[in-house]
Length: 479
Image (cartoon, rainbow, N blue to C red; front, side, top):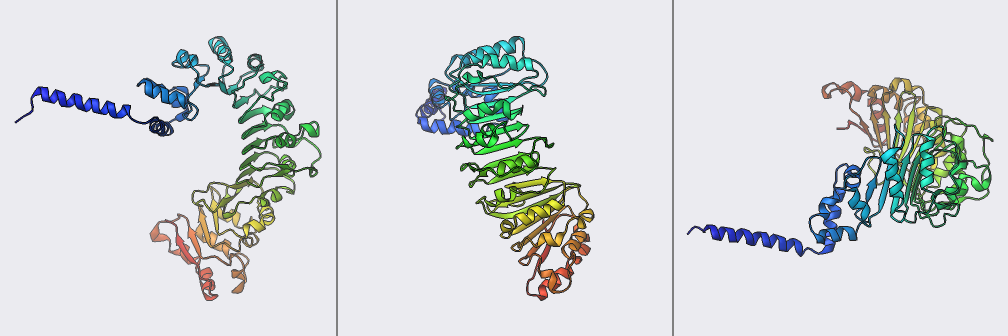
């Protein structure tokens, strides 16, 4: 017997009530996990979640969802992002209790009219302003900005300021309610195009920082009390430090002396530096960073290296692999940890320079750390292997890796790389002094598979001698 229309209607209504009842009975903590999972999967997160406030769609479903969202606004990264363009739902989000994120990163126009009015009115909500990002086009823009930020912001956690090229003024003493900024609990500070002298007072007050990024003129202060080392000494929670200085060295002396006191940054795990080696040497000479894991250093112009090797050798991290990337007139030297795959090549220590002889200097200085490395990867990135064949003393370089079991090469003429491995050897025993623990050589893509015979044949002398000595090595193409 077929069901009637009334029976169909009743079944549909029961199913709908059952679904609503199920949603209503989802515990708050489960809803929170669902919301957070949804948030983390948002594509173009900053634009969608922060600037377009897509989370408002969730808040409009029902009172329960809205209550769960607002009760966990910190975990769910809810807030009102205000910038030069009038945001959607501006009245709704500014009238509530949510944190305020100010994002005025302008590049081509000054702050006037409605954008200026919106900035002034948003900054009046001092107890809710959590993040400030400001990039003015002129000194006039920053004059307006500092006029509106001469008071305390107790909820402020993050600041990003990018100054115009011609801005040489000191940050006002009244900035953020100064000169007494002891109330500050900044977690993140990023300042670009500034002098150290102009920001030292702010740095000395930012004692709770976990992330610091500076584009500055020097690391030397006008006095020891205003040097970057002194400022860092008051940041015991710092975990990430990025410094960008000039490649042109203007300070003296050329070889700074070792500081009397070492600044301990026991929680620092990530360090990036780009600039002149003298500034880097002056900085790391006075730093102790036992927890450091990720180091990314670039200094194209340099005198002899003194303190950087000590700085690297004191890192407790065990390095499993080394990646040497050779460009046309530049090399990059990267150390990788045991937990990382060398194919992904995520840098843990990276040092970049255009001078090949400094590759040997760095390898020699780090010989203790390199002795335990098990994988070595050499990439010729847009470089001619024939040029580098005689440009680097390969035999001396390879002697630094007595524990390497796997050697990988990419982007090279493999016949040329075979000659590199046999460079300056006297048969038969001499070939075993370089890479004595070597077990396999993985060759990168080169010719089609049917034409790879000559390339494999180029390694036959090496394979034969090692076989006779009881130290066989496999040579194959990496698929």
